[in-house]
Length: 112
Image (tube, rainbow, N blue to C red; front, side, top):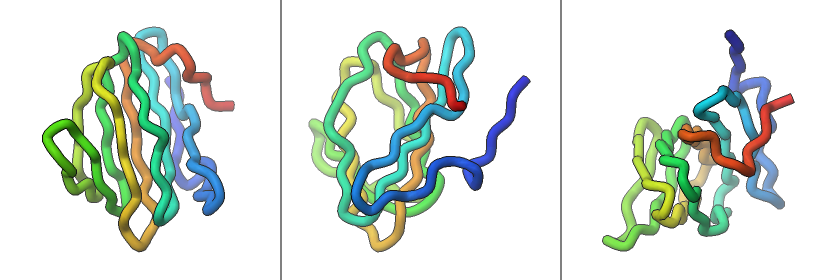
């Protein structure tokens, strides 16, 4: 069993999107994404991995094939691996997201 706390994770960086591994198990992993106001996560997909994206704090928007959807703290979104993730922090505060992936997203590394 392992635990982690977001207060111990990488802080916001106004010059770069923060995307770090938090926990990795044999069949799934969790990554933390932090976007400062005005930042956009580069659009990407997750291959064979399903993605559940949970907004922990802040607000932003998800750009989808059906249009733009508001993303605020407490929102949970689900993506198949082939769907492109496009998220922007268009709020005034930092946006922290937890990305739960299964199976393990290949480029993810365990947190150190």
